Image (tube, rainbow, N blue to C red; front, side, top):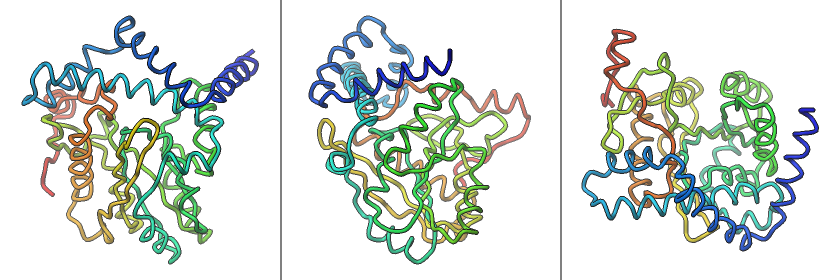
Length: 307
């Protein structure tokens, strides 16, 4: 029964993905009114996140960002569906990567790279990176295994269509060691703006006017394996057209102070969000964990802004 349901969902998703993007964007426009005005999907959370993050903006400005966000969010949904059947040639036109020369040289030398990015613009389309790297290297991304096995299988397939490898977070080190032993350089992407579990909180930073607990695992991995580290600065040129620029964060992460790399990432991400604030995933309850509750649970201070 589960297998039949999976193939039914797969078939429907695939058939919808065959529609031209211009048609899918018409669907997105209708979806916006449904999600924003009828369902009102997480609107109180989004309004609170925006208001707290941009205290200098007027209510009118906040509402404008809010509506622009939901409009983009619906575009993200149909663009992700389109990824199920989009060809490589079309994808390369719609998701362009800049600053790849230095990355290619690093990979050709046999050294691996870590890539910081966030839930910004269409992060699913970033899995098309193997189409643009053009050298003998493995492109991979770390992901959380979804609770629903069917959707986990669907997204695993989706994210691998353009040649990228999806690595479950719990197996990150095993894969890095595996590729290292095989002599294969790897560029591995970390969507690092997720909320850490309580027992994984080691560092807090000021982010968008919030005292924010952040993940530090990417930094530990980069330092341990001396990965050349980049930030992927994505911008949306227009509907269905993105540019992702590789920005070098550190050539020698081991030489930075503790949490220095983590701090660099959050400053880069904040600048990206402030440039086009509606393109970040505001429906995520990013600030549900507070320092006060953390201290109550563990009675231990976390470090903050010591980089």
